[in-house]
Image 1 (cartoon, rainbow, N blue to C red):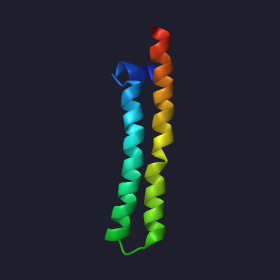
Image 2: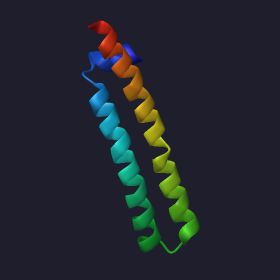
Image 3: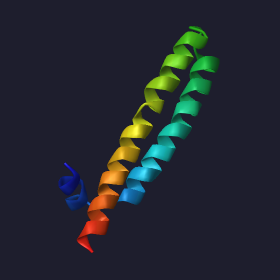
Image 4: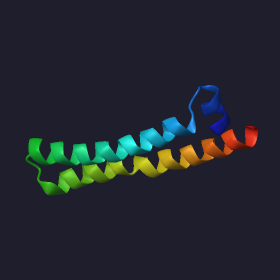
Length: 73
């Protein structure tokens, strides 16, 4: 999978930025859900957690890509 991502042009920096964006989107989705929906804080919390769970995956992929990038040189 990592080699395929590299072939597609994905770098570790892109994966790290996606992880950081996921954290920002987690906060944003929580705030929007809390204000826009009448379901209350529980649903807003679930949205924030759901989107926030993407960040570790992106950071992990970034680490794997970084290892591949450094071992190639």
